Image (cartoon, rainbow, N blue to C red; front, side, top):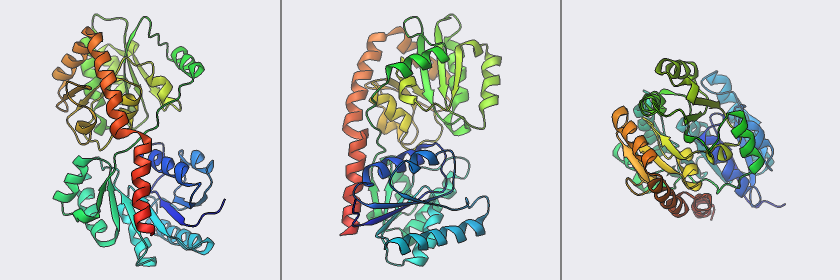
Length: 369
């Protein structure tokens, strides 16, 4: 394999979240046409990257030890340049990582993907991202139009912005894995109605409101199940809440699931009660699997779910409305099927992986020629 161009991907962490998954999708696609170097702290998300044709260089996460991490990142960039002259650097998720790149290479193309910010400091992070990107990025990718609008409102140079929706592959399901997951979590779609979600167990995902809504509709429905796939700091708190609400016996905390598409295939419909969200990979995956969806009127969710056509949009934290919409779908399986078909069509038009890859490579091509 001969690579005529050298791309460097820089990530602030390698966990098992959306940022890493999108970067991995790019690596898988472009490794056959470019030489690729990955610079990132080690983490649980590293193994699938190491399976690709790339050079990996670790640096210490800056929040753990800033000065050590900065020295190691600079050394990694210099080592990558020594192996082959770098043609483009794509920074994901952390605007501050552009600083050493621009100091080392004043004219090198830098692409920065925002990937959304969460938590109490999200507004500050967006403002800093605008400041840093205006100074140092060549192009900035936002993963939904809502986020593009936020960035422009906060001062981002619109000429630098490219909106490219997050894309996910059409799943090829493994029947044996589906059966194994059904057995593991005691799920039976033939006798149960299964509501599902996939998210970090964090405050920004609004799962406490989903549990409250589920408890309201589950009172007289012994065959109703709620599946929550994901890990996070609120795991024990949410499990205790399910216990307190009297639905622990019908709520499955699945943890991190390697075969998420197979688990999602068991859902009757999907719920995303987020309080903060950019472009949800889990929602796109549900649409790819032809699942009706309920989501909040937050961020890019309003661009994924079309209210009354592919699912329902509700205000965040609104337990009453969420419970009403869940009950509405439980009472109308024909509407669930209609929403599911429409959601799949919307996925194919906007959120398929091929679309994301084509638009990203078009951007690379403009910067590399």
